[in-house]
Image (tube, rainbow, N blue to C red; front, side, top):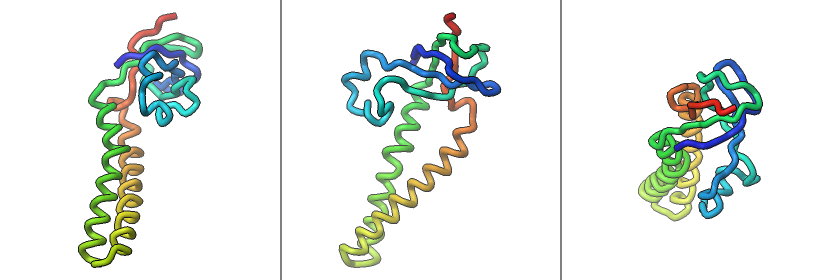
Length: 135
């Protein structure tokens, strides 16, 4: 997936890029979660192309990384919710324990997602990459 954007900040070999949403964003049901202000998407990208602040660039994000990220954020916590509900209902034998188990499960899995994000967030091969500088 390639997007056009403008570099607004640089730090070491990374650049913060403001990407203008394209035509597909208007009809996307997830548009409020991706960019709440719906004007720009901000992301950090590997800047091996030597882009500078103000340069217009092409940013690439591999589809498998995007799918993995979406699964990590949306599906993994749901698994915690259902697993917590199951364990709470099995061992507690009442609806109250099932609800408490599901709350504990979703909180635990969100904490795991946060730890995984901190660990994987520093890996440059999982970050978007600036492939071309257009200016």
